Length: 446
Ligand SMILES: Nc1ncnc2c1ncn2[C@@H]1O[C@H](COP(=O)(O)OP(=O)(O)OP(=O)(O)O)[C@@H](O)[C@H]1O
Image 1 (cartoon, protein in one colour):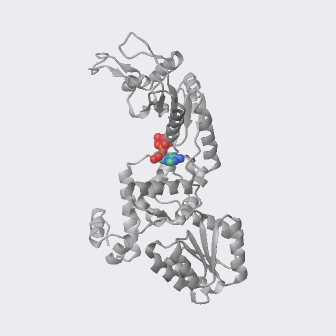
Image 2 (cartoon, helix red, strand yellow; image 1 turned 180 degrees about the horizontal axis):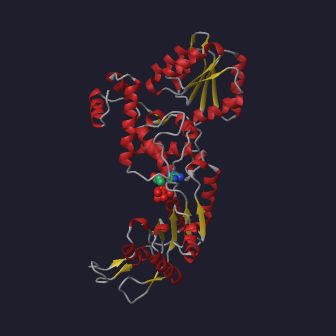
Image 3 (cartoon, helix red, strand yellow; image 1 turned 60 degrees about the vertical axis):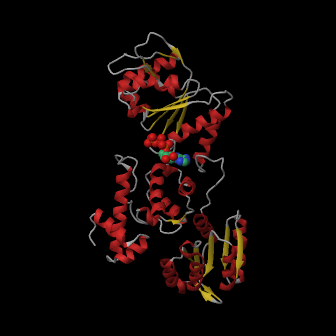
């Protein structure tokens, strides 16, 4: 199946015909059937990404439609959305609780329906040449990277934590490597300047000779020399001490490094790519970052847009991440389209890293083949998520974050089911014994 196909189940010829025409105009493949029997036959032939069904059919109703799909596909049935009149809204609400995807009340605005179908259908662009995102900001960035890969200018990537600065640096290297004709593979060496203490950072960058200082038992070749002819990625350059900044500036001006304890300069040629989440211009004003160095390293300045300002990328990234998890685990789970809808309406303050952490949790807690927002440990509607990722909060270890989310999720599930262990365990897709153990571990009262 290549086209996104919608199965429309509608006995009213005018409604069926107009839905079919409008969906075709939107480039969907449409199959229109008039009753439950025809719908059953169609469902035997393919797995539709979306089934749009009238709640009242000549040979059955929404309940029988849902039962048919559940019987055919189990917990993994395609999204089923009911079209309902005023008189059957209550039934539609009940069916949504029982497993239908959503409902839409007649008469409806067709444009609004198309918009919702786009969300239900997850129209992620899956072309392999897109690597950063499908939003206008991401596409502009991709075009920029294509252009600058061939230029010999230093690149400075700025953006909030988790926006993908390292992903961009790696892609610049990949593009350069693709254009590279040399016999030796184009090296890329990365250093996190925030992770190495000042004195050691200098030695890591420029190298040292044996005996240059206490503890320098043998010669160390610095990253400038290691990356010679390729890419040197200095991550978190905003954390570099002023003394090291001065030495870095000299190396960039001279194109030569001198290992600590050596008398000799070594010529180096690297493509420098720096990244930071800190505002370097403000640091210059505050006197904590050298203006001349900022000028040197920002040959091509790149500012990465936070994910909350490029919401179009959420679906695309989420979809790709689930595919990556499938490739890793050998499973074939699919993203619940409501995941994306909720991610868009939540006051989402995290970036891609946080999105992936939430998806990882939902993926691993999934009790069937659907990766659902409900299993992400975040609330489904309303106010700011209780532990929504927040880019400005102090980071906590991922293990603690996941444990907290698991704890909250279990507590919520147990309380919603009035402490009924068998029911809760079944809902969570784990054994009662495992549920008991987890409740004990997290000290959750029942
Ligand atoms: N466009 C993207 N496509 C795929 N994965 C992405 C993208 N952007 C970010 N990621 C993923 O999000 C996570 C964070 O990305 P990355 O480390 O590049 O961010 P960063 O801006 O360098 O963060 P930090 O400032 O904390 O170092 C990684 O798991 C990365 O693979």
